[in-house]
Length: 343
Ligand code: KG4
Ligand code: ZN
Image 1 (cartoon, helix red, strand yellow):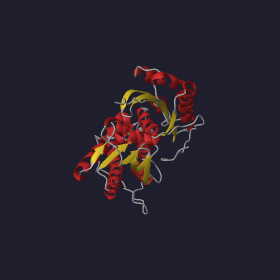
Image 2 (cartoon, protein in one colour):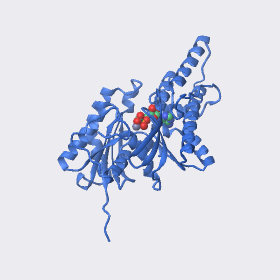
Image 3 (cartoon, helix red, strand yellow):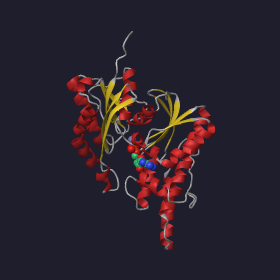
């Protein structure tokens, strides 16, 4: 009998404010997952400062990679290939991960695989749901992206809807800031919403006229800002928990509405969510309920695999590796890389 050789991918991620490395076995088994979060550093400024992010990545990347290998009880000699996020993201931040991966590949001769960050987020679903295989529909909601994606096959994506302005996570962060919560705003609003009434204030649920699956969140954000201004002018005290809960409900209603309409229209029986906002507790329970009622199987990564990490990059790289995809040492960071496009 032919022995199937195990494939070990070293995944590297540095597209925003997390320096991360992981070792993933055969695409679905995470042997190590090290994340150095810079959030504490950027909190002071109320958002990610690109220059500070790049510098911190440089400082931490080797330590994080060594940590991931050590936790997996491996050396580079045990690794099959190196996968790295090369876009989209902050160019200076991306370059740190890409340069490190290229250096490792050059020094060891290991194959190099450039990974799309969003493909990573989607692939996070494979880690804890061993039975999940394409095709399925996936809603990607992060700080920079709001995409409704048909996952036709591994590495084959069709974007059927996206945001026209702010990403869902961006809206969370901006509204949080406006009501005096810290960065990142998503988890803060998630927490505060539990103490508020989501029916207290009616905020708009925007529709994009000509394309039913597209999203728009800037109107909602403005509406919250207007509400705050009016309260201030009238000298009325605001209830932050009610605002957080009502805003969150408006975002969730739109995400759930659009996504499930698409799932039904396309006739999928499997639906997944991904990205930082996918760790939102109310969003998860709303999808759980709606999917159950429609007999749709609902998938989501656990919260630690929703936000940026390198295990998801290792998983995505595994499927690219299996298809024979390899990047050259001329791999570059591409800040606005499109999903499904390769350099
Ligand atoms: O995927 P991610 O870690 O980075 C990007 O690729 O953008 O997503 C970060 C975003 C931030 O906007 C953050 O506020 C949001 O995800 N987020 C949340 C929650 N946790 C993180 N939004 C809502 N509820 C949460 N629990
Ligand atoms: Zn991300």
